[in-house]
Length: 416
Image (cartoon, rainbow, N blue to C red):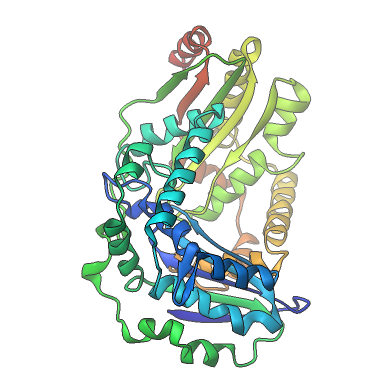
């Protein structure tokens, strides 16, 4: 486990973020959701503390302790005041080295996760997104939601969880601690018995999921449109592509494109779909940070009578940077917006720690953002257009709406 101390003015608040390599992408084929169940259950008892005592320790300190499952990793988060840090840090170690995984707590988390999946299925946007993800990634590591599937979750046993829990010790880990006073924290963690097993364990390639190294051949698309027919007054349209790794040199160019299309009231989607034509309830860009083949999705929510026009406008917006270069004024504004976007995402001590932990987990330097901002100065409009032509041509469409509306959209899509 690599420990990074990030000294900053945090008004006596400390945030610790531990990134553990491999998240839901490492779920076995027939156990989708096992990392989600594990990450939630290790919060319900670890080391010498059962569920009630662990909750009491955290709540008495007014602290926040969470574990979240992402596609590329697990993230343990702790936020507390400086004076409680030494009392609470061992909990992070125990969650990895000695989770209790009590049967009653496992069943409770399985039940809560199944309810969360059912709630998701009530969302038209989620249905459209699930369809797009399945169309693009199929049964590859990125092909399912971190929550998993109900059928698979019902099959997960305590023995299954114990095996995955044991593998956490052997995975790469990066602990970033952000705060004002970090005196002796490194030595305290190093000497804590809660982290003892981590000091004695080497990375064992045989105990790490085969999915976590080279995520290749994910793009298994066989068609360019998928649909989900339900009784709803809404029409959800998702237009997107699987693109490139976050550590790719061209990723910054796609980040700028996503910022131009969907960030703020000066974005192209807002100006065209909301201000000029008024055809959508909501529109935006989904372009997360991923270790491999990042989704780049333009999404919009509209009504039946405006669905065809919305699709035409989405196609026009998508093609704008493929067909045209930005003007000098547009490029200057875009760079300014992107700098502001980075600054806004790193305002709090928790955001700082989480971002650095995520970067390290993806194999990048903790000062990656500084390098990006330096490179930003020299980027020109031609580079952005070239990236759009390489990575964004021929997007795929996912639709969720009534069947009769879907048929009209399919006919319009076939004309493209």
